[in-house]
Image (cartoon, rainbow, N blue to C red; front, side, top):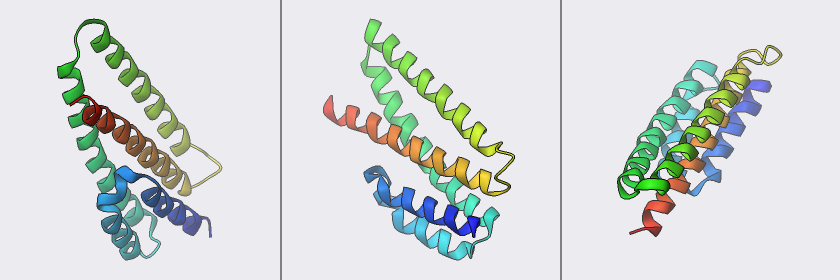
Length: 130
């Protein structure tokens, strides 16, 4: 039962963020094909996270090239702080000894939600600063 709750959480995450709309159908189809198998669901999430990671990096690179001096340093500090929190929370959730294999799903759900939110924020900044 816990596995299906995690599955629903991952699907909910994929529909909650506007930045995720492009690959929503792909993620849902992948989750459907997983038939509730944890490792297969994790593979779906990993593929989705990889897509957002590439988009996040592209947006950050665009912004960092535009900035100079104090603004560039501020953006770098902000990104480092986000990454530090992102990695710490992802690891904390994955290591939950009371959650079994669902801990990995919880961790990945957080990771996907967090990276999609950060990607949307950075992409918004790129658009706003054209």
